[in-house]
Length: 319
Ligand code: BDR
Ligand code: CA
Image (cartoon, rainbow, N blue to C red; front, side, top):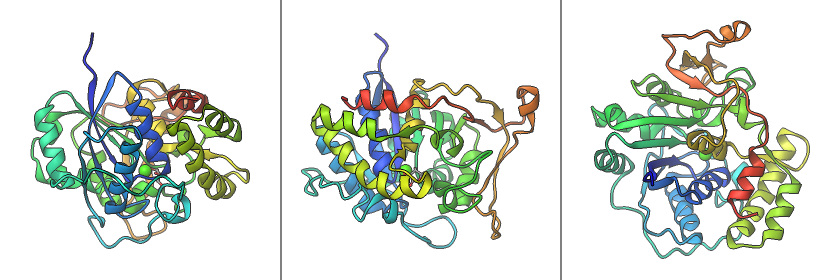
């Protein structure tokens, strides 16, 4: 039997971050060896606490959780996404606040250093939040790119509008300088942008199935998506439903979702102070020629998926 693949998750847990974690934790082929948190949906400290709450739900108190950056590389935090993820960052779902474990004594960068050393040549990273921790790790650990197999990032908007500004997606606009550093680093990078995450939509049908399954996990996801449907769905689609951004990226990492258009192209992050700040400028000019290979490309970008992942997701979550 092939041993499970070690994965480090960097996140800002988060309704959809929680879905990504639960999805990965349900799989035999993946070993989540550590989780680092960063500001974004809430403070890094609250996101770490939320991560422990989710781990408690599934009895995985063994996974180390380390708190990372509370601010971007440049400037200050401009907002935390409590309007989308609730005051507690988990959709105010009623998931118990008490946990029986504590966060790691290590910082996020220290945990990345330790795990990338222990699992050198095998570790994959799923990054579903502002990229500050990963950028700091690149600055601190000179051979980090050699230790890591690849990084899969939920973030950006290639050929569609942003969600935090007309041009920019939330994870990237929180820290464009970090995103530019991470995307241009010398490791295989996959970007899973809004182009695909916005078409993988959880609906009331999925919530009904989660409620009917009546397991601790399905009840939690149904409760947490109730808030998300109301705030995110109504705002973005005009009806109660929601994307499951970070879980889509997790499924691209596992290979369960294989984008039908998935070229290696050049991606640059707009780090100016103008209206384009945080935009991911993706060179999709090859689209009319079937995306001929672009040797100078720095990133594989998911551009098209078929919208069927939410069915797989809720099945993985027990519904
Ligand atoms: C991203 O922003 C966060 O709010 C979500 O957790 C996701 O990672 C979507 O733009
Ligand atoms: Ca996230």
